[in-house]
Amino acid sequence: MLFRRSLCTQAAARHRRRIQWPVRQVTKSNFSEALAEIKACIFSSDYVAVSFQKTGGHSAPWHKILPIDTAETAYFKAKNAAERFQILQFAVCPFSVKASKLIAHPYNFHLFPRDELKVGMPSYRFSCQSSYLTAMAQEGFDFNACIYNGISYLSKAQELATNVQIGHSSPSSCTVQSSSVHSVADSLFRERIRTRVKNWISACKDSNKTEDALISSLRKLISGSEVYGSRPSLNIDVCSERQVQLVLETLKEFVDVVPLQLPKKGAGVQAVRAVLTSSQEDKNLLEKELQDMEQEQRERVLGFREVIDLISTSQRPVVVHNSLNDFAFIHSKFLAPLPLTMDEFRSSLHLVFPHILDVNHLMKEIGPFEKMNNMPAAISYLERRFSGSIDMDISSQDTDKVNIHGHNVLRVCHLFVKLCSILKISPEVPEDGQSRLSPSLQHHSNIFSPCASNSRDPIDDDVRIWTGNSRTVSIDNLVFLWGFESGISARSLKDLLWDSDDVFSEEFDVRMVDRTCAVVVFWTPGFAERFLRIMDSGEIISTKLTDLISVGLKAAGYETYKRVCGSGLRKSDLADCLDQAMDETEILSGAVKSQQEQPVIYWNNDEMINLNDL
Image 1 (cartoon, rainbow, N blue to C red):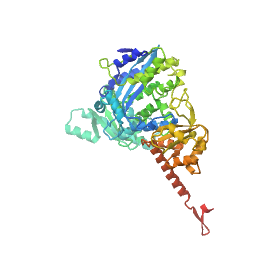
Image 2: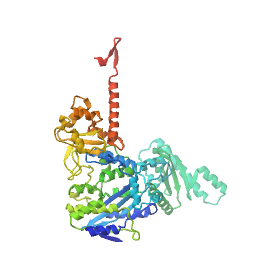
Image 3: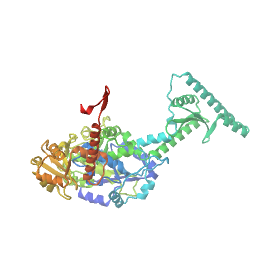
């Protein structure tokens, strides 16, 4: 059933508040059914929008990605949040745009990670922030239903580790790599297996004849025959991967035998099981049963990861509201542990999702939207300022029950189409079939830097200071200050610093990072380095600056801040983290200096010489 919404006027906005959009709610109980549905929707749509609810984000002002963050420090912050917190709802909305009409298929998946295989891995542990949980509770989120009926999942890395530990047996794991060259030992091994299998098959067929039960049991015992379900089976022990391939090659000669690999704990294969079928029809039936079992286990173990794999396989562009934060979570939860650097993160992500579009970066093409920190506010602003309507058709199976969960993903879709309309960008996919994006949209894809504007990443060492100002400055011209009077404002701190030294006689600015730390911007190149040298050396300075230092004023360059962001120090006050980073640096440099001062001794003609004295 299709639900049409017109998203253009204030009346429409009030209408949306009264009537909720139908979003298909998916839990463990209806996941298999929804998986088939969303697969069809993804491959028939042009884009996929995603949005999710998590258990936390940042617990202190400086933990947020700030204008002063380079791409690398912003990644460190996003990485730390993704590794600490958990996703509880993941909304996915395949959509297309046809003649200014948005056709959307929204699904909201309720997630909860657990050890489905009961093997002790993976072991999940995550943090929660009360403000995030309170907001979800106010929206009617059922935490009990999430824990008991939420969909579990394994990341790609966890899947590989699990397969190594417990393995799996299926026809798909029994690929035969034929080798035209066999050694004498190989030939002898294959002949022994061939003879053993022939005797086993003969014994199984003879046992079908009327004979004494004792004789039949002895015959099976001698041949080593077992039962797989209702079918006879034979386990063939192997000692190496080479022997596995030789056994599979040999079993291929017997048309009524289906081979299965039996993994051993840790890695490798413990044995190959040969299952005897009664006919070609019975063989086809067994292979189908095994494939169904494999798919059922895959769905149970991989869980929601199947949806991520579908999006990746489809190669559809993925539309999000905050690409760096969102895909740090997606990579961490569903792909593999996050890499150490931003460049590695980009490269890893590009292999799975070649086209990522961030509506935040599209908004920067229009103007400073920093105050629009949520999608409803941004949509409302655009609707007041720009004319034109966007019709949205929502297809949903939940026609009798309208739920509030997962609506943000529809807002992402609407915001994307609205911005494309304002920027005169066609969101319709080219008909050549060779590209998933129009040339104008390709210009806006895969941008992760928080400081990027005009569709370009900034110079690596350039950052902004204020959210509403596009003026940038090199990180070499920034100094972090802390240890000043508690509660002081940026303006008051700037007044204190003014004329306290020659470095503050030229243009400079001060911005508070949090209540304990400020960043000083020296617009004259070289003044930041000069100020840090003064603070570090203790050379004679003005009385005014001496007084500030005497009450505890400290300073550090951008490298110290970068080290704090990358180290995972998450104290509430940035000043405490900078203090710890400075102490660790002093300890390390002291140890290196001490090691360098150790005497280097060698003997020459029975004379001891200290190389440090030379």
